[in-house]
Length: 149
Image (cartoon, rainbow, N blue to C red; front, side, top):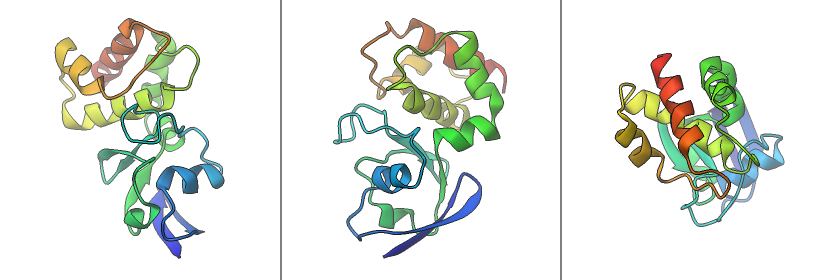
C-alpha cells in the first residue's frame, strides 16, 4: 500500500506492506531518531505525535497514519527549538536510546498541560523508561521546556 501523511509538516508517502508498523516506515525512510526499544508499546522510545497525541509507533500500524499529521523528534526539535535546548541545558540525556521519546513526550505534555507541576511531569513522563538516569535531569529538562512556553 502507499501510505500518505503529513510528516514533520511536509507531504510524505511510502510504499509499504499493509501490516507495516509506523516505526519501521519512519526508520526505513531516514527518520532514525525514532527508536524501537521494547516493541510492545511500553518503553516510550518510539513515541511520535499523531494529530497532537503521543503514540507508540512500534505498535501503531503505518496504515493508521494515512492522511494524518505525524511529527517525529527530528521535526519537533526544528519546529520548537526550545524543546531540544531544554534537554541540552539540563543534560536530560545520557546514552540517547530513550532521549527521542522523552523529547517527543515533553512536547506532548506542553500541548496537554503546559503548566504541569513536578508531580504531573513525573506522572506524564512515566511511560518513558530510562536505564541510565534517575530521571532528575529529564524532569528538569521538561520543566525548563514548559517554562519556555
